[in-house]
Length: 505
Ligand code: FAD
Image (cartoon, rainbow, N blue to C red; front, side):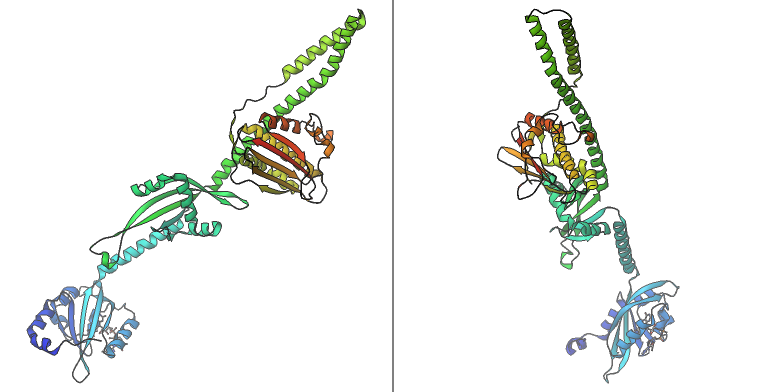
């Protein structure tokens, strides 16, 4: 409701002042009769519309209409005016020269002493440019949002409290895959990886790029992202910051999914490891087979040597002794030939080895077989496992051998459980690995013999020469460790191999 001016003040102001104020106003002002016929227009009206005063006097204000303003706008305008209420709105107007402009118009009914609307006061200004700028900002916002949304990388903007204020479709997909607010997890991982460099990057405003972080996932390979971050400033748009600009800081974080690339790299690494282990295994079994053959031949060779010695002591000579001497010489040459043919063991440097990682690799290598045999794996790694000082390839071969033995044993079982349990544990001075299978188990009497060369419970048709556990024991001994075979506890059947490796090496 309009508050009337105090009667005294209005009476004090000379009419000429009112007239001049309206004449000199920067707003386009017109006064109409109650049918909207123009009775007066000020110079600003002329400047805005292009019509001189005499050209509009007596005409309806509709002469300014470009005829694209929806009828409903005029209807609601007039409905408001007929209730003797002021109306404000935007109309598309046409100047005298035919050009269009957007008018921000306020119409106020002038009510006479009898309570009737005698006139209307219209005030308007050209807001075309303001509207153009607003639209431009809106269009740019829409354009930026579409580009950001179409980007193949996840983009998220965080405020100073690290709350998400803007994100794109790719980021929303990550929420679906990885749970609420992956940005928080990424920031925690980045802070852990970058240490003090994270805050330095923020303070300098330089940002960072090319940082890789991984998302561990339950029962799945981790997801990998390469991240870039930059800090951006925005001026506070509130009215109270108009004369004292305040800055707000935001962080722009981009996450590019490189999981497929990492998986390919990992596959190449595992394949390389598989080839290396196969080669080492081939050399090792050749070494063991030749050493075993030498060992087996040394028995009869020594017996012949003893027999020759005995015959020589008795002073016997002749064809038999000569024949035996010849056999001894030929046998000695054959043995030397075999010894010379034993390939030398690969020299490997001792380094800090995390047995959890070794076992993970072994399980990766065994995955095709585990799937083919339908074996359920229970993998329980100790979370903070200290490293052991060891030869990584030898240790890899050791556990590969134990897992393969376990899978052979499971393969031989008909029906029932098909389970492989692998666990690691920490003791003050050593790390323990247990490999347990649900196979037929090893009878107590055979548990010590199982580590002897050429001992096998498997048929010769399976190409097992019984060197696996002998080699395994050699590797464990080489690391100053301990290995034995037990029955699994808790009423389970099968075989449990326990390996302990000292932490000090
Ligand atoms: P009209 O036939 O004039 O009217 C459209 C609708 O409004 C109809 O539903 C009709 O019933 C209703 N209506 C019209 N006149 C009256 C009335 N006197 N009393 C009750 N209902 C009525 N229009 C512009 O396009 N640009 C302007 O800059 C502009 N400035 C104006 C300034 C003032 C002070 C006033 C009073 C009006 C102004 N108008 C302006 C409105 C203008 O008078 C027309 O109503 C409008 O242009 C539509 O014209 P029209 O010929 O299309 O439709």
